[in-house]
Length: 526
Image (cartoon, one colour):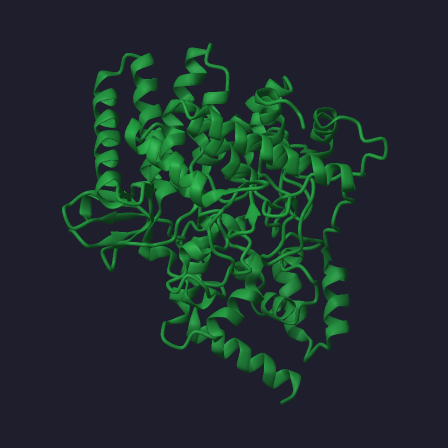
């Protein structure tokens, strides 16, 4: 089969699976896949760049329609010709140099402080055809291939900024996230057009908790934005019958409402396009669009990818994210509802207090009914279509403690289960199974360490919190001494660099810096 036939076959298959080309609805902002159509498909499927994120972050040198017309005027491209065409028409991002290893090995705390300027980016004004979203104030990126501001990463980054006295940076980022809610109605996964169809674990309320509250007008504005974000997550709740789901809400058999992750699109992720296409091709018992949506929704969870989302607990081909009611998402929404009620009390808005206190109470009752496994002493995700809790223990069980949704007895049981199942030599395990996916054992992640330590301390489980925190600090310090780097994730079984996932291990690294810096204020450096 020649290259032209390969192109035709690939586009025909994709059109049947999930029409991605120019299918944006009125008012929807086009992603690179929408804008560059078959050019995009060819660049990604031929893997002209080793990282699928490279082309989606490229900036066009001339209007996109002219680029696409020039591409279509050419009969066929070899790989080399196509790459020359792309580099002639786009400014292709180069991976920034990694923060230099600290040859003198200054203290971990000093090293983190020195990284903040390296990871800070100026305000963004996109050009036509660029995937970047506008941001009015400076912000901190995770590092490596992650060139933009990310939603849940940023809360954990901000913990370190606050600990280092960088309240200016905290306020700037809270304002940038507020601007995203104001502009788009929600906070996207990251500040790129291809992330707009999904959000991430909703930590905006916790960010506001780190921000200044002395300016009453600004606090009210942020509280209003929290309410708008809540409305995004709850869209459709009033129209559902028991057993139905719409967007991110699920109505359970007794009428209770809980939430799921559910990206709004049914196409391959722009930034992992080739990977998603190849995964869907291997699934023969489901429409490709359903597979794409579950992959996207796994990315919305932040745990991309994990055995939590797999029907067989092993293989990505069995992904079922939209069929799952996750513990951590619902705990965070309880936290959001509680924070709104408290904020409204501060502003003496009694109707708001009544509404959101009631919402939090109802969510907690539903979490106890559907997510709490009393005999095992942990919270488990719930498969709402099959009406069954999933036997996938994970660090998500600590999120109800993080937001104060657990009872004292539940917290005590979770602590015992955590010590028995999730405590590893180098910190907190993500799950108890090894699948090769990055959000499974043996990996440990900074945000999960913080949620655990913070939640356990909240319920007086100080010894276990300290053990987790100190083991994590020792893992980070060991790698820092070896390489001078702060990594995205770590192997907590062997206290070394982590692995797995769709891309190489990244260093920088925003949330590791933030959590490590905050833990250094709680526990002595190893």
